[in-house]
Image (tube, rainbow, N blue to C red; front, side, top):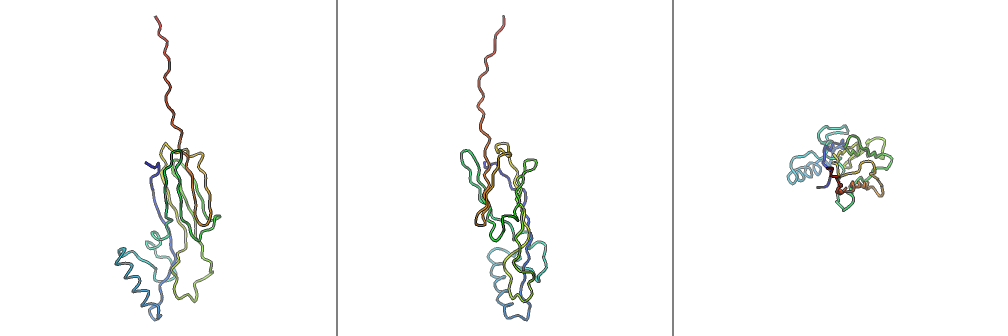
Amino acid sequence: MTGLQTLNGSARRVASAPNAGDPFSLISRDFDRMIGSIFGDRPIASKGFAESGEAQKSLLNPRIDVFDAEDHIELSAELPGVEQDDVDVSVLEGVLTITGEKKSSRESNEGARVVERSFGSFKRSFRLNDMIDADNITASFKNGVLVLTLPKVAEQKPEPRKIAISG
């Protein structure tokens, strides 16, 4: 048991598909159909530059690796294109939460033919069990990877207690 339980994963994505008159629209539609046939009919891009609800909730969700060591658990989150200042990690009432935002480098998408990169906010939460020392969690961020070290509480072996016998 790793000591973590995923509570949620939600995100937003801003993307676009080309207009119907655009020569790239046929390629985009064919690509979407091909991906849909492999991975199911999960939307790949919204039909404009505005957000499209469910499509964004599932696509900007950081990938997480969890490794269980003897004295700690290491959680690594892949956050490509996200700046360290745009990531927040917090623990409240036994729930570890990673939130952040991937910002676009452009002010507007005017003139864009295809926008496949996703932008927006994300949030991942994990319930910690009693084996995690929540007060001593540490975090580092390098090359778009957030690494959290969750130390385990040292096992306390009960010592026998001598009980005096009266009589």
